[in-house]
Amino acid sequence: MLLMVRRCRRSVSLFGRSRKYGTGIALSLSLSLSNCARSCAARGFLRRSCPRSARRIALSFLGLAVGGAIPSAEVRGSETVPTFSNAVVFTATGLGSDAGYPFGLASGDVNEDGYPDLAVANSSVNITNCNIDDPPLTPSVSILINSGDWSPTSNGFEAPIDIDVCADCSPNEVAFADLDGDGHLDLVISAGDGDPDDDEVGSWGIYVCFGDGTGDFQVDAVYETATPIRGLVVQQFSGSAFDVAVAGDDCHDDRGTVGNDKVYVYSNNGSGVLTPADSDDLGMGDYSSAFDIASAHFDNDSPSNGLYDLVTCNVGDDESSELTNNGGYDFDLDDYPDPCSVTWGWTDVTAGTFNPGTVGDAAVIDSSGGELRVLYGDGHGGFTHDCDPHTAGGDKYVIAHGNCTTADIVAGVTTGLLNGNQRLDLAATLPACTEVAILIGLGGLPSLSNKFQFDTGGSYWISAEPPGGGEDEALYPVRVIIVDLDQDGNGDLVTANQGSANISVMINQM
Image: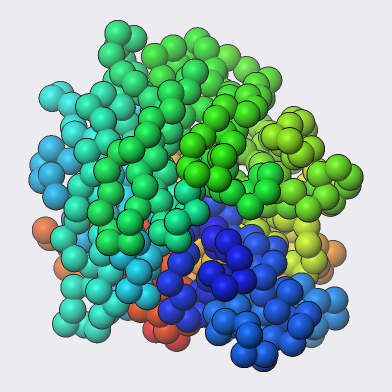
């Protein structure tokens, strides 16, 4: 998830009804994006010349990034664990039984009413096994407009509006950003091969839909990539315009014999026109690919200091890949092998500043959702990771319980603010149990024993299944985002449920 900040007077906030922001599931929530809030804080964050949203970000920035402002985790003790309403499910598309599998999620205020709306990528390919139905499902991206009313008797989301993206591609992930600088959020879609079983059929690439502030979208531009893509991140890699980076999709014609370990970076000319700027081969084996991608400041050394870098989670290999931004869209590859000598099988990655400072960190999750690992940035483009479980002071969190690891599907992880302490939390899906595990951020330095608060008690597991199930059942949540749907200052949970072709919403009750 990523906070989009363009300039101080168009800043955004997780805490109030700011009008211009967007978040994407494959994007990292990077607090260093609150540069405008930092400048407001430097000038005095209570000055009326700073917009209210920037003042609120400034408050959180001062709490998170100013040295000495946060007591150690051992001094703070335990943090409040939020509770959530019973899950409510919504149809992911308006296409009925022909609809594709929900996967990628993104939030943004597309109709500019002060409430974040939702985009869902509905893939024609079952991403857990790369199979397609017979007859094939209809690929689409749907927009769900948020009414802002999440009282028990309300619906919250209006009926989904489907965007006809393509006939033979597979929309995988989505993100919102103002690409053309007109003040309205635009929609970016990464699409893979629409039929991985047939090398004669299928198209893929980056699809761009320009927004006009009403919530209506249509495909305005298509950028074909050399290989099918899935992972997507929109970030300011060079200058103020939002650029696009995508990672190879492991569902492709030659899977099993040829890997798809590619990362493509596209530059934005400021008017929303994208141009191929860099392409990197991650150098993995024939069966490997970069399943997803995220962005943060991982390297504080010159010349990359201050520029956004990239990190991937790799499937079929026991490493992640960090790509250091040297400026001018030149990225250098730096592999991070698994220090624990175990193949993790990562299927999602998120990034943000988990402890005080300016260095980005990352979290990855294995395919079942049984194990989550936190990688702390070392400031030089690498990571540190303690292989011990978190109960022994390490960075491994065994978040599943019971039979939650019996299904080898695809689990997701994201970062955001859940309990109001202004320190980043984590949420991860447990597909086999239709649950979300939450880890409460303590903001501690990597040397401290308590970095995220998690226990095997039930309060850390949030059901994505509505009471009673039936027609409203939810099956196999594969992606999750944290977004403040009701704008009460606390992040809510939304999951994409691949097995039931719907989404679940759990409203934070703090």
